[in-house]
Length: 101
Image 1 (cartoon, rainbow, N blue to C red):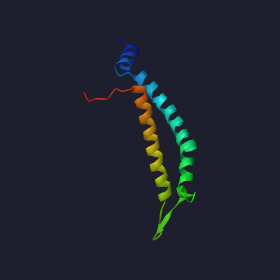
Image 2 (tube, rainbow, N blue to C red):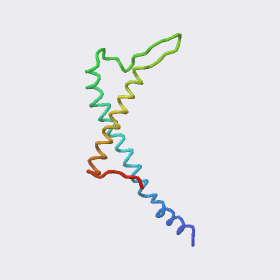
Image 3 (cartoon, rainbow, N blue to C red):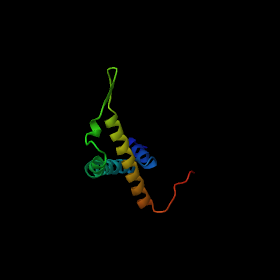
Image 4 (tube, rainbow, N blue to C red):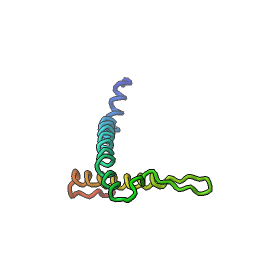
């Protein structure tokens, strides 16, 4: 067998092309979900939380600066993104449950 045949078998055996397509789709979906969260959902949350500048809130203790507002923002961002991904996966997969083999 030649090196090209070995390479083709490698691509087929490990389903590299499918993985590459899934990765590219994942990147595109990530950009879409980030835009949804940052441009639509977070401004609504910002209106619901009094003070307005909560994302830049800090706490200074003995010279250590804790950016708790940014951390809280990232936690909220993660929860929203995880929930949106869950909804998309549930919609695509329907009522099917993922089971261990």
